[in-house]
Picture 1 (cartoon, rainbow, N blue to C red):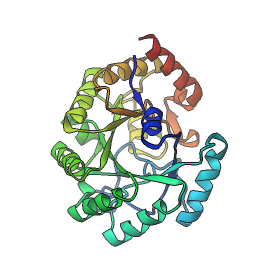
Picture 2 (picture 1 turned 120 degrees about the horizontal axis):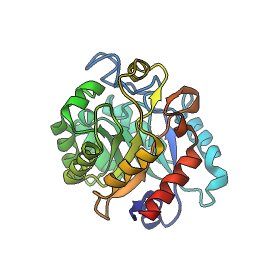
Picture 3 (picture 1 turned 90 degrees about the horizontal axis):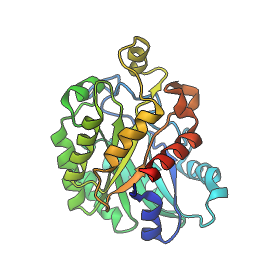
Length: 291
């Protein structure tokens, strides 16, 4: 099975291999600060999905540390500044512009990626992204996870599907590249339900997809349900089958940014097999190559 990889996309767009520098802009989330709720999504850790992002430092220092982590693998020295933790468009537009411009300013940063929620993209924010996209390429990553109402309520996502559809449409109209996050193996879902989520993301116009394995992190509400035996996590072989079915839905132009997602080993409760990232990726790549 073939699909369009992120490496292929970056090679064509920038002419070289490009690495993302994961950053923490000091944001929170409307699902945590009381606007929508206080507990966040059931799977979300205290780091707000930014387990591998730098943090606790100035943006300049975060960029420097993130560069150091991948410098030995990145001979070309080109990077994407990636605001990963929490909801990175949730704040005054003046603050957003200052942060984004600071992250884009270094010469070796060739683009900006912003992780956020579809319900945190008001018109002034989209206008700002459109303006910055004229300077360096900007992409926005949206946490859809699923399109199925029962699951949406369970994970406490906090917005209806139409909000996602509207956000994609407005971003595309502004010329912004859109990447959609989808979780495979959510409690109560089937493989076909995950494929349907993928179909709807494609129909909405997403340019890329990040597929994530449902994994359980310590301190989350999901951990409580897992330990209570309310659901089980996929085995590696099952996940490979789900992934294959979802990839088959994608047209050739849609970029696959991730074929799995993993949590920090120190916080991982389940599935434990996901902690061996090299083994997992090798298995998935072999499985897909044989399909």
